[in-house]
Length: 393
Image (cartoon, rainbow, N blue to C red; front, side, top):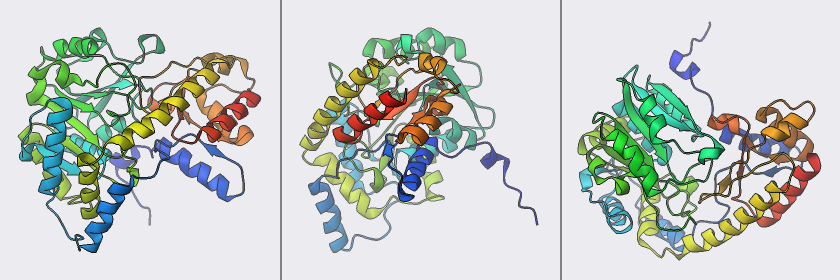
């Protein structure tokens, strides 16, 4: 018997960031000394008050099904967070809690997109955006940006990319993988274009909202242009800011009709997010926020060290970032001078085999000639990794 898989699944690829992390783990298990700088996961433990809330939920027997879209108290906490932090007003029927930010975007794609619809995705992009668009039988339209423009799409590029099939624009700020954030004037310029096309929905992925050391406060496109309220989806979660990656809680806010459609999709996939994780997420959002500041201090120290060390290496050019826990150096000149290395993919393979350092090549994010380095590990690991890279090149 020959098993015939769907064309849909053949069109997508496994997550390259998870793949490199898994490979590093396998090599360590085989006895090799590997420093992994691939995972987008804080190395800090989940704060104690969050874990305590989850333990209490278990002890109280809060282990049953909940409403598909999340428990009311968590949804209210999210509404209060949006009001306090961002100045946005939402009602309970405009909030959907999901199993991580990834499911939020997947739900959106499934609920919104039809075959042939186009989704504008600036590159570098988070690896899952294009594949989740493909799983909705839609078309990812990739807009390349450069280091010279700080990896941000311009209003002119946006205007030139829109067609009568454009259904969705995706903005991720601060960005995974580049760490750069859009300024309010830059977002206003994009919004001015979007106002001319009232049928285009905007998805703003704000997962790294709190991991930001750029001067000023966080802004997204809805802050810059409140007129887009009726067609903007705000996506966020607790994974990064509170070191809760494994708890799998993300959330979305937006128009009632879209949220209802996303809830319908979720009801036929995972149903509700984990009950215990929802209680933990509520404790994270409503509790002491000083844990974020503590992590931020360490991330900034690591960022400054890594950017400085990379820029001292011949053939590497690394922009300082606005936030997140990634840096995204350009290695095109390095590739040119290393014998037998013809691409960022080759360089990633060379580093893991010869230097014992695992990085994710920029090709995975739609930007060949770059590497993503996660600084979500100890300073000791970063120092060792940079020394190994130095020796290898």
